[in-house]
Image (cartoon, rainbow, N blue to C red; front, side, top):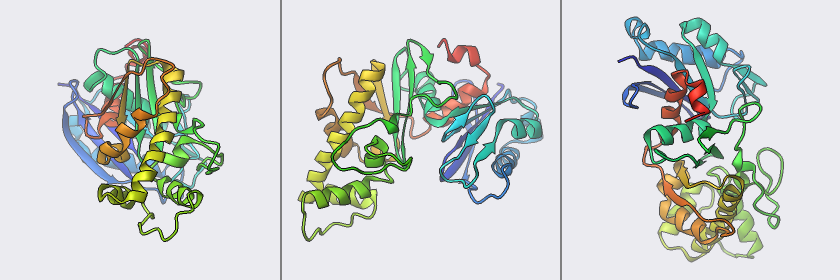
Length: 314
């Protein structure tokens, strides 16, 4: 069977896999993302080297293409990353240098847009024409397929739902520089800042909780700390507003949640956000991905097959 190479380029890890047409991961490599690079071509060179580690020359002859899912912002027309958050370079070319080095067609897509494709082809989104995939991890991102068509936008950056406005009270600034964004409150990176600001707002004295990381905050909640459980309720309001925005924007039949914050803390995320959803529109089925964090990688394998027309008419 002719396979494809899927690459999931994240801010912390890069994952590469040889994937069959049915979504079977034949073999995989996981490594640290090489963020300390001085040349714009450094990331592409690192991915190229790992592709050669993953496959033999004989296997490469049977590969149909390479799909790369990546954190944004992207320019799909040029095949580059623009001002990536964890790489101190203004522009990172990916498609052309990898294509020239390996000699195979290369396709680039945002990681969460890849995630929704992974769910539609291999996960809970099978058979659905209106699906939103939401990843709550270091940041918050989304991908949407509406009426069977993947939303990409002008440059491939549509569905940046982490930058939906969800709050005007706490005034927390997002990493993009603006206040009130969903990602600035409820992402794994920013939950500790929200917890601190919430404690200040509540005039909570003698806080006996390690609020330095999201993991420590959820650990306190799991140990039934009363203050942290109250904060989890407030976090649920923020997430509920984010989901309400998603419903108003996309009117999906199913929402699939993913990302480390959700996967490791389902009981402290999902029920609380569901309680705070605006019921102006019918609330769809909301569930947690069962693809074990592989939705973006599997989505990249779909794109690697060159299904440009099929992506728009699933």
